Length: 261
Image (cartoon, rainbow, N blue to C red; front, top):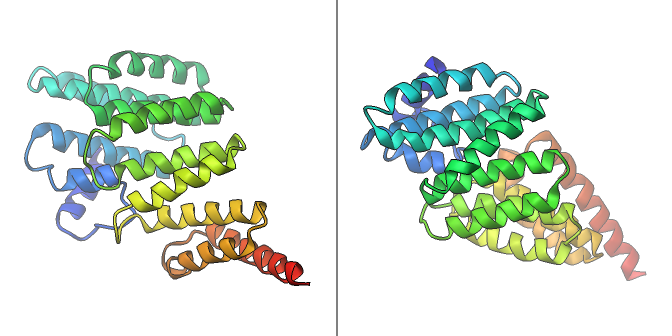
């Protein structure tokens, strides 16, 4: 938690405001000084980022956060929502640690209480359930959870938050072989991402759309989407993204050349 607080201080000072922060993180950064709830929510999300960067090492960390929130609820009852969110994040951490039964138990508890939470917290819990479902090969259940989260998030106005959910929905549609549906979802995702934010998410979606176009043998369309992502490649691409970009461009160019013969 001390490391998370240090990172929050750096972000508040403007020294660590990277474009790669999740939308909810950026939103809460502007409001953390207004309410106790916003501050603690931001701290929970910061710990979540730390846990994701060190998979399998956050089980004890999340238990400590849960205990601290439990002690603070008497002073600020609104923190009860964050205990629900923390329980969902703990479930995912147990999944990463190879403890599926504990993950399912904690997630069942979180889902039971999620309906009494705000739309954003409830949606986040269902998205985390979708992560568990995908990890266990339950892609249809994951899609249902994401569609429910999508309906909740359409009721709130947090820039970029819906785009992240739509992207996950598109990726899940691809796993189910629903190519046309995935393309429709990805188009809305690209429209929903705020300008000049989430460049890595935008690049990831563009690469997936290009991959679908290659699969459909729509070579010019594939190259069009790859060209859109070219300016983002040098600044924001991971090694996987760069390799995927080069591979897809090679396939699209070869396919276009063959089609001209």
